[in-house]
Amino acid sequence: MEKPKMPRFSGDVREYSIFRDDFKHAIESRCSKGDAMTYLRACLQGKPLELIKGIGTDYDGAWQYLDSIYGDPRYVSNEVTQDLSKFQPLKEGEDSRFCDLVHLVKRSFNTMKGVGKPHDMDNNHMLSLIEQKMCVEDRKIWARELERNEKPASLQGLIAWMETEMKSRMRATAPLRNPSQGSRYVNQLSGGKPPNEDIWKERNNRHKQGNILLDSGAQISLICTSTAKNLDLKGKDVSMTIRKVGGEEEVLATNVYQVPITSLESGAKFTVKAVGMPHISDDISNINIGEMAKGIGIPEVKIYRECVPNRYAYWD
Image: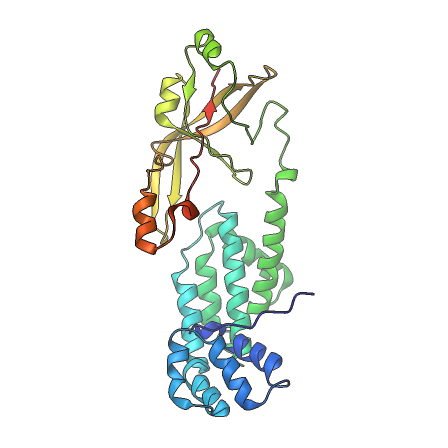
């Protein structure tokens, strides 16, 4: 069995109690305080490491200093409250973000239990804050749950209900439980340069060369709007919300297309439902490996990157 790795701590007050318990469990019963101090320095990163540099070999003093800065329940409670406050309210149908909210609430409650202050989470203020993050429909379901059980709202009850809802939504949206679309729908395509490319071009003037990204875990397929126009595809109007890094959202008015595809090997025909996007990804730019090698002092042959071959998509 692989030896467990040492815990690390870089200054997040929410992780301090877990780090402290894991470290003491793994080290204190096996080492002297002098050796334990050496291990402690090796496990700290960033600001926490800088703070104990002047303590020397005083192992107990190092923990007292760290406890005074990172172990204060007030700081932990403030961080937990900020995490919940910053969470964007849910909208109708956002089942994946509902799961994110459940994980955040459970993690926050366990963090406060770890510092001995579970009541900082289990109170009316935090209950109200969590309920405000749910969409209107979820709040209705939660209210009916309270009426049916004839019990007052509590954090434990809310977490239990949210876990049940999360499991139900995960099962309902699982790929194996979705209605079968028939064999004419595929979610994975194979690409490559066919041997009879010139013959195909002569037979079909709607040949389209482009870049294809294959992702078996994707939930939707995308197609460039320009490609859809070149293929004379007719789509249905839809509105799409794109969430960018940092939580910024952009609403895009676009179309959903039924893209017909024919296999060059078997002649089988498939239809892929794809959402039109103005741009999906930019072409990979060339990199001057020679200049890079000189800058980092490594022979160019050791950082050689083989070119990725183009892939071809043929639309019937």
